[in-house]
Image 1 (cartoon, rainbow, N blue to C red):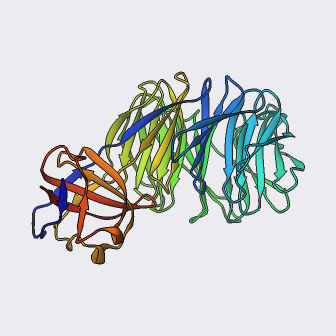
Image 2: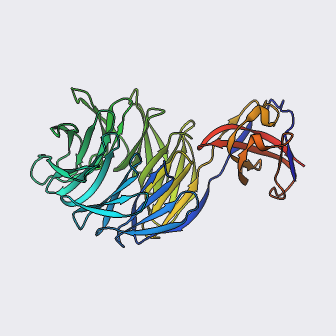
Image 3: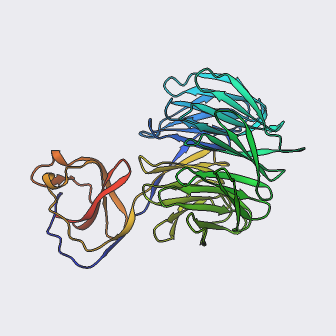
Length: 431
């Protein structure tokens, strides 16, 4: 079947609601955390129940497994050095994985490490140790360590950690005391800020230098102005905010409220709030800044709610049982969902949505486009029917031979993607 473009002078808007397509990948037992190296297009999954990390090729979905410590609870990637860091909660250690060889080494840290974050620019890794209340700082070059005492009081329980790689400040949320300890990366000196009750998650906007703390106990978010004042503002959100993510491109913050089945959207400029209904018990959330899409993993309904940031509309994607963690490769437009009970990862290709109006596009010729990337073809009902690598300079006479890939003749939508970004879209006649 031949595809040839036609003159596009239609003045009626064509609405594309392009659906996501997913793949289920078996991993280890009770996968609880997932991270992506966007440079190598490799995914790493910490399997708490089998003391392994599953390595997934983002290109082929092929997997391999690496033995790590006992109960790997959290995982982080330094894309600049291609090293992966795994916090082993029950063996008081961090496993360091070489992303090239998959060889490992072990670094001793404090008791029950339950959160980990990387300052890629400084090549330092920060590990929150539940008891005693401390952070282990790992030198990414030598694997030597320094311990920073948090000093947030008796019974302190650091539970979440985030890094601003621009200012080299580290923010550690203490679930028991309701404090956030700010560590100065170059000196390891500390400052303490009061947040809300039982802070559960923390995220940083490096552009605005604001820190957002989701407080599970009092259903609030503490906003820290991370300058010399460390002034705070308290925002009331949905019940039991469990996870939080920042879209730096739009300066919006997304809060997954596990007991009200909603996501609160915070305007980073005004702190104005809006609410989006999602599935049951959202307990993880991630952002794709290229597509302006937000993904909320709904633990009790075994789904992901896709929020389209431009319109605050949603769609729902079915995943495995008890999705607990989610990570996005913004370069490829694929997001990965760790399903805790299923022992699987759902790999889902995000595709663009929106209204293209008016449909006045240049002729479909190599000279006019000149794109190398991925070509997706869609039926007018929004179903993706064909995808292929595409090099516009290799087409002949403005034609693309698709053999028998298209089910019927007629009108189709097309979208060109480069590195996950929609570069061009329109429609054509297949005949």
